[in-house]
Length: 141
Image (cartoon, rainbow, N blue to C red):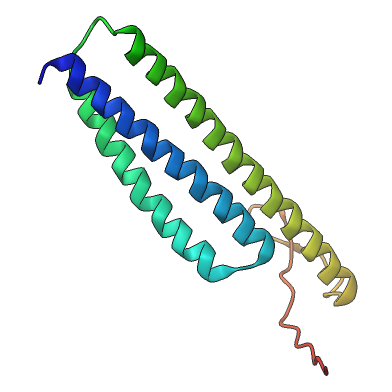
């Protein structure tokens, strides 16, 4: 097997792993929205395994010293880069969603269960936001 064939094979595997990563990210986002913690946990584990696979493939690709890339290899590299950018955007969107939701829930809890009104300061003189105490809701169906 020559270097070009090996590099093309590695790039095709990286592309397939990136497709799986993007699919797992969609499932993670849906699981967070629907609060399906088992699906979230299984997809996070899957994502970690896929990330390790991708890093191994990247290290293997980096070990191949090649100066000239074929048109197909260049196309595959661009395709992988665009999928990496999509993955980064999906991570950012999920992070923003979690931050906004957390802020909303924190605001609701602050209004429903007001904490002490005294301002607390840290050792450095910054204002410390108090965490709400536990709230037990009694639901009768």
